[in-house]
Image (cartoon, rainbow, N blue to C red; front, side, top):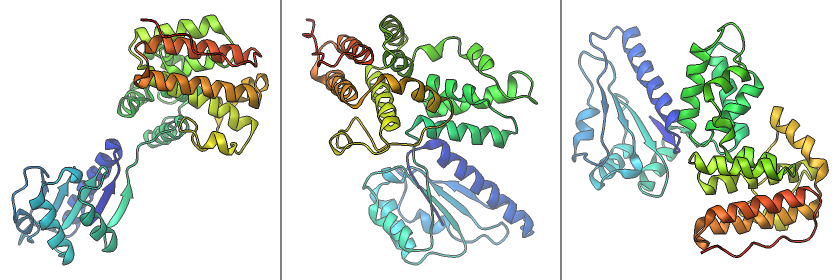
Length: 337
């Protein structure tokens, strides 16, 4: 029995595909006359008592495999039958459950964890560094190196949509350039055709160096190409946090308590180099002021302002001023009607 926990569909689907292949291979090695019966159950339309039928052993095929995705949406009949089954599971069937999160079906989850189920995390990757590490591992799996600068560009352009990020990376590794050579930044940039510019992280990169003109240009470009305001604020918060982490390995308690600044994560590669280059122009006082500016923008884009784009512009201007040495608080201009 296997329990997959987490929202990341890529990881869960890969695990399920691997378990399917393993079931077919095991049946073949055991000399089964027929392949095992593999059934995927819809958790919302499940009919009572079907599980007992599905877990019954076959006389000719291998051990049946029952896959139940979306357990967090299970109807009462399925939950009841699972609870009954888990109280006395059979060795004649394999069961794979995928629960994306939440409290629905908690009793089933508890029974799985207390029993013999193997539990695997399918959590979403939150941090750019985590996504970059995963892409490098994926490149290794596919047998073609991926240049660190190319990884950083892919994550910057597509990191908000992990499935698209993975699909594009796989396509580039398999179809672009010389497969015996690392996939380069130039090849990635050619494919993306400027999408790297249209991200919140590029806005943040320009702002924390005090480059007002470039930061505003990138902000307008990002908004024009559909980047959500909340993602631009999130990128700015991440960049400020990275600089603060570079200057002080442990965040001050008052800052750690803010929702905008999560616990520090290790930086590496191109990201670390960029942060080290910009950190000397900052100090704790101006970083604190920048965090307040980001907090105001965060509140504004989440509903406190009727003009979130204006709030973003105010945030970018404030961060640019602090990066240029200004120490006085920069207030939020009145919201435009």
